[in-house]
Length: 371
Ligand code: NAD
Image (cartoon, rainbow, N blue to C red; front, side, top):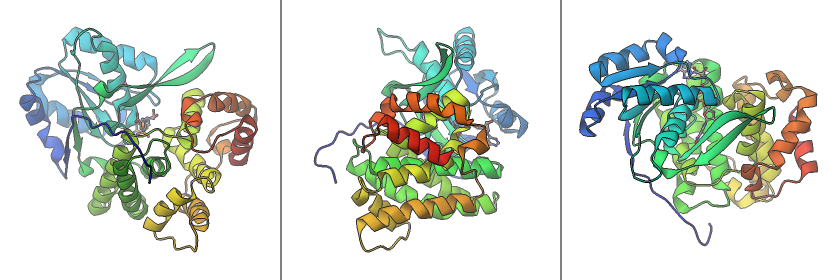
């Protein structure tokens, strides 16, 4: 428990359920949005979801940007800003993972008026478990002094106005993407439970989310077409997003952002590699909080310290069972990259928000152990 806290609520409508994507046209009508721009990926074009939204919206869909790349490059944001201006768009629809939602958020942020309340609202239709649809944060990757850096912005005005969670849209998510973005969702719960700005609602969402995710994710990985497992997993990811949306993240997320923005490691893969190490690093400093999470996933230990340490081991085994990479060298990180990652990570505000302070030497060791 923390003795004082701040909690922000966001004006959002969340619709959850199999087939709920069919409500997209109603959502535009209810909100009096006449012209939409769809932000999505080639994978959604290939699996037919873009054609489905095109059919559902008809003339209300003014343009489609389907070339979203991972980690929200500025060039994707510039292209979407241009489309939104050319079509005089009244709403952005983001269909895809955290990157498509990130491009929509960055576009809305760039186009909002500094002198009035005029904004470009977002309708998010997530197809992974990354959780960006529930948060006021986005990161954009730009080159600064010859180095690619992902820079994050926090602005409550870009939180998606409507979120459509349709588990049927996740049935074809490939095995590895399912597992890795599922670990990303679990990581939100871990970092929310020990966050320096946690509050009773973020903690409750983190604990419930972690329990759903821990049990549902292996079933989704085993059989992607299991609608009940996909539904439980998406509800877990929703709760993880709720937890993430209102608190500061720490060491784990800070390091993942550097690995993604600067070295282009896929976000979910970075999460799977870093998470067990982050739990171990924070285990003693955050034993009471991590022990709560350990208990909801069934760990029985005599003390909080033992439960927190066992959580690190259990999560490492869980990730291995889903056959994800466990070392940075397996995802293209070279030993000579570690010095730059150390520098960027110790200077990251997110890492500085970690409940246990991280020195440069500790960061070097932390990264070395997972290389
Ligand atoms: P992603 O959006 O980068 O997508 C990864 C790949 O998966 C892409 O190639 C995409 O085309 C493909 N893909 C997505 N859905 C698919 C589907 N249904 N079937 C087949 N392929 C599919 O991955 P992500 O992990 O969802 O998102 C990561 C990004 O989101 C990172 O930039 C991360 O920083 C950001 N993020 C932001 C927040 C936040 O709160 N702002 C939270 C989590 C993640």
